Amino acid sequence: MNQKLSPLIELQKLDLRIMEITEIRKKIPERLHVAETPLREVTKALTDTKSAIDAATKERRTHEKDLEVHESNTEKMKSHAANLKTNKEYQAHLFELELANKKRGEFEEKILLAMEKIDELQKVAKELQEKKQAHDNVFAQEKQGLDAQDKELAKELAQVEADYREAAGKVEKSLLDRYNQVKASRKDQPLAAVRDGKCMGCRLQIPPQLIAQVRRSDDLHLCPYCRRILYWEGEPAKERASALSEARKADFEVGESV
Image (tube, rainbow, N blue to C red; front, side, top):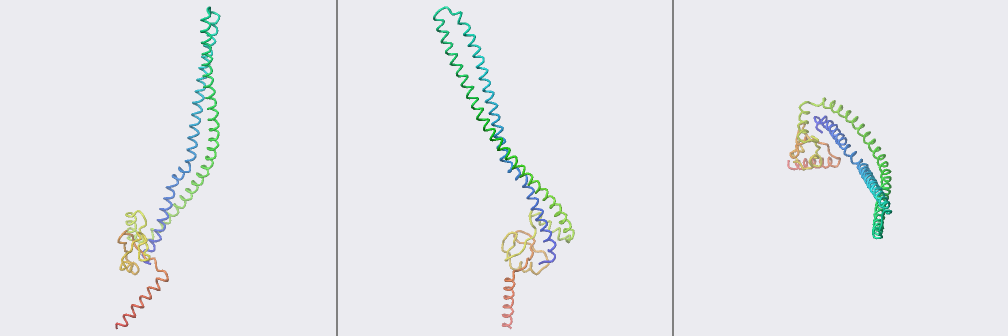
């Protein structure tokens, strides 16, 4: 591995953790909002149900007042019966009383329907209140957990940022400037390992000559595609054995030609 890049690789590890923590913390309010959704929904349903109860209660009271007025008018009508003089007037009076009784029945029916509606809505409200309490408890626990997580992440972030500043202070200024330039242009990790002939940043195959330069040179080399700073991560034993075999084969061929 390029020894000049070793401090930058360690710095990038801290950088990535900072980005990871920041991203997790950024999503906590969204997670909290999602966790609160069932509580918001049942709260709205409860509020709407209570409003419906109030409207039904107001409707019942209106019908009761209308019935009171109607009953008062009917009593006045009955009090006029003594003043009736002819059979025709009496028959008309009986017809008006019949209509009045029918009208009273309509008012009573409306009152009864309103009361039944209120009873049903109150049952629904009771169920919703119980659900709301359950969702309240669940959300309170979820919020407590997320708040605790955020607190721990904030504590870790402060430590990692301190470690980052300390690590950055140990990096050669020109290297650090180059690292920051690439990071600013990419908005993500500036360094990428070379593995299996590919840049692990963009996953594209890079030229063999560049791979050789990354392996052997202490200079900085950039991926021709994603412009990340490349570093050699080393080879598995099998690959090293294969490379050694190829080298011996090449030496043997040279010896034969001589």
